Each structure stands twice: as C-alpha cells, then as structure tokens.
Length: 110
Image (cartoon, rainbow, N blue to C red; front, side, top):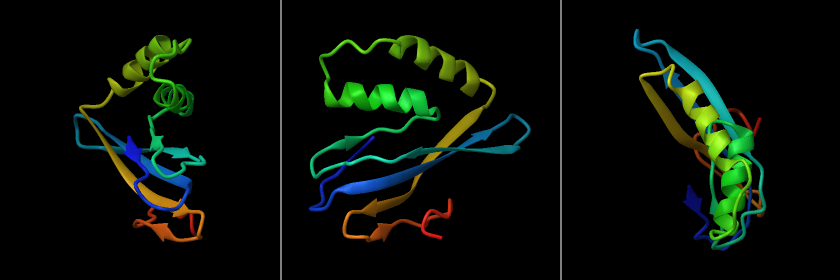
C-alpha cells in the first residue's frame, strides 16, 4: 500500500512481484494497477488483479463489507504458498503531469 502525498494524481503504478522457490529459482509475477490516485488517496496492490480491486474498494470504504474478499485472499495465499519467499517492489509511478518516478524495469515508459 502506498499513499499519494504529492500534489499530482497518480495515473499509473506498477508493482513487480517475484516468487522465490526453495531451490532459489525466481519466478517473475507482476501486478499493474491503473488508477486515478488523487493526492491523499491510498493505492493497494496484490499479486492478483481481482484481489487488488477488492483491496482498493476496502481502502476507499474501510467499514464496508466487501463481498468475496476472504475467498480471494485465501486463493492468492494458496498460490503464494508454492514459494518460500515473495518479493514485492514498486517499479514505476506515473503522474498526471507526465512525470515518471522509479526504475521502470517493467518497461511501461517504453
């Protein structure tokens, strides 16, 4: 989860997820979230886009019941259980003034 503490709206944000197996093999995963993250908004990412959507809904309405959240979290947890470690990193953030921040390993700017 990140919070937009800047003056500009976040138009795109990409997190890179990597699963690491017991033998050290690294399996690339990615979660891309295109949003209108206004200043003060929270952005949430998960290794699954449907889970990301549910978590974003929950972040926008903290007290609201979010249908399917527990089931989706359980499903993603079973997928991630194949790995001994899961790394997540924020790769790039694009602002509405066309500025991009981050290393952009994913290649969004290309």
